[in-house]
Image (cartoon, rainbow, N blue to C red; front, side):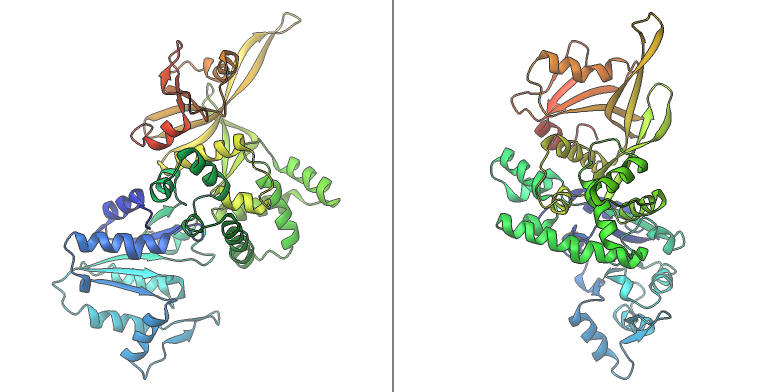
Length: 438
C-alpha cells in the first residue's frame, strides 16, 4: 500500500531546476524519505529520466556506504568532524559522485537521505549548485533538520519543503473502509504513515508511544540541552490537554504547580514551548483583532502537528472530539498553504446600567492566503437552530465581504447557505474537496 503525497510531489516538481537545494523537512516519521526516494524518484523515471542519471544515496544505509568502501578502499569512509562526531568523508563522497557523473552534457539528480551524516554537508552540497547540470534534493532527521532554522544552514541557497503527516484524504485514500470510522481512527492515531499501516490498535499505540519517548524526546534533549526531562514532559502533557484552548505562560505555570506541587519559571516554560514549536511538535496560533486588523494580547492557542502523538502523550485517555476536530481543521488549512489566526470580534452593546460596553466573540480560524481570506467556525454538532445561531454570533460582527463558513461533524448536514449568506458544510465535504478553500 502506498499513500499518495500529491501535494508534496507537486511541490518538488514545481521547485525542480531552480538552482537551489531542495531541503525536505518535517516531524519525524512523516514520510520524507519515502517521498523523495520512492514517489519522486518514480515520477522522474515515468517522465523519461534515465535511472542512471538519478543518484540516490542514504548516509545511514549500509549498502550505500559499502559502495563507498569498495570505490576507494585506501581512503576512510567515515571520519570525525570538528565536534568529534563520526561522519561520512566528504572528499571521498564527492569523488564517488564525480565518477558517476562524468558526462557533463547529461543532467543529474542527487537524492540524498540523512544528509546531516555527511561531513561539512552545507559546503559540499552548495558546491553542486556551481554546476548547471545538477539538481539536489536532501532530507535529514537530526535535531538540526527538525527545526525551523534549517534554511539558514544553506546560506540562502536552501529551498525548504515542509512535510506534514498524512492529511485525512491521503489517509483514507490508502486505508478505505467506512469513512466515519476512518475519521475517528485518524483523530485517535493520527497520520504518521507507519502508524496508519499498523494492523491493530495495540500496535498503533505502542508505535506512537515509543516514537515520542525514544525519538522525539531524544531529539529535543539533544538540540536544546534539556536536563529536566520530567519537568519538560509535564509541560508537554499540559499542552496536549490544552489544544483548542486559549493559554498563556502564567496559566501554564499555575497548572504546572497544581499538578506537581512545584513552581516553574515562566522563562523555562517559554523555552520549552519554543523547543516544541521548533521541532514541529506543536504550532502556536495568535489572536487577531478582525476589526482593528492587529494582533492582540499574550493569549494563544496551540495545536499538535499530529493528533496521534498528542493522544499518546496523554496515554490515549483524553479523546475530546470537539478539540480534536479543531486540530484537524487547523492542520488541513496549513496543509493547503494558509496562514491561520484566531479571530477576535468586538461588538458594541448597551450594558445593564445604560452605558456603552463591548462584547468579544471568537472566530475559531481566520485563514489567509494571498488575497483570499476565510472566517471559519468549528462546530462539532448543529442539532438545532439555537446552536446554529450561537455559532453565527461570532461571524455576525464581521462586515467585510470574505466568506464565512461553519464546519460541523454532523454528516446529516450538507453544504448549504444560510439566510445570512454563511456557508455550512460537514467535515467530510471540507476534507474531501481541496478545490474549495484552496
